[in-house]
Image 1: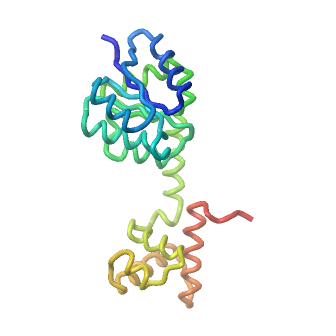
Image 2: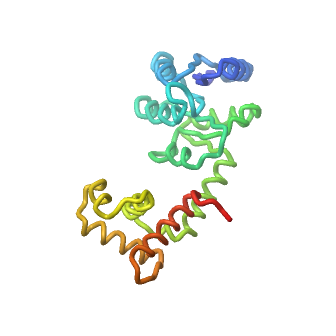
Image 3: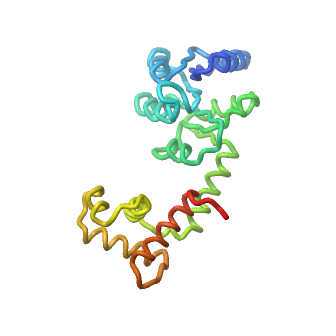
Length: 226
């Protein structure tokens, strides 16, 4: 039996071009196409494909509809695999896609569409409950992990990073306590832990806070070099 595919992309030429490409592959059948997230979900419910191939950005917001689709489809139809296509090696999107499970999902760069054999294998693997990650995406994930491990900010807890991010926005302890719905004493405790973990010494609290914020901005890539 042919592998039944639903393909989603908001660009008409891409949608029809990829459909024609896949329809020429023995063992694949594109049973429906969609141009936005609601249309994709409707097509999956109507056709119950073996696997979905979807662009990561589509209407209505052109942000992460492909990730949303993967989560919704896997939750509602766990037997349907989902392969998400992206133009960029965005580690954050890959993390989001794989957050719940790597089973039955894939993340490929759009350039892989031109390599029909690779794309076909990815669709087949994901349809069987496996996973498929683009080699360039894997490299980006490894590099991202390495940066996190090498960064002093990697020592911080999730709550401490939240406190530091609010410090970077210029909020004082009272504002931070209000935003996080914690006590002022708890904020002070978190800040002391942040300064200790970042090995920031100094007598003047304001200077130590500035150093911590600079470390955060540098780690996030928000400081201009030079």
